[in-house]
Image (cartoon, rainbow, N blue to C red; front, side, top):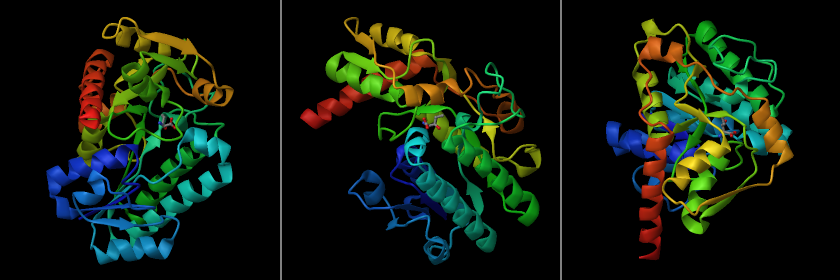
Length: 317
Ligand code: VAH
């Protein structure tokens, strides 16, 4: 049985449904800080859980006799930069509670890291798996600390911890909240609604990205991978593509020729984006557990626009 924290978030809302398909609905216990009448809450077990409450986390895992914890509850980069101490408390407090529960109940644990774990002194092109990490954002400090803490729980206590450094994730189900890469999600929604988008990230700003179906497949593949083949554990670089706002706008224009792109750069999120790599190297993930991405910018754009059009038809129907 699997306990998912942050199950109503951008990754959680889709990973929960996917895992319920793969492993059976009753085996995936979805939790979040509040309950909503979402597909996640209606398609299987759902419980309210505050991940900063250590006892509540332990009791929830024990009650449902879980053997796996997928810990996704966290604040993303832009929100973390606005509320750094809350971010430290939630991102690190929640992770320590999940790790302690995993240690005591002998669970496998997955928690995501991010390209945000790299900083301005990290080489920006084809950033290697093992390289200097001096992030200058609270989110980056949380991600590097999280990687190190999960490695520690593995070599010190034998906890089977695993994690991925995700790029920006793009999805049409649940928009992300408070991220820096969210422009690459918003642009599709705005293109459908208004045929225009004003980007807060400047042209020429390259960031790694991945379509959500590839991210979900990567999590499941890593969690099912043969542990003896893993040289790394909690920080695999994984990426499907890298683009700047001009390139994603051009791809959208191929479908919506009248689409107009404007720029109103947000200095805070621009400086976060500038501190991250342009492209990261996913070789270790490919070699150690067979990572591969199916969607590139063209294929993702086709699918995003199609699914958002269907979604808007359903809403208006
Ligand atoms: C963010 N979407 O923007 C997240 C992610 C790599 C980006 O960590 O904060």
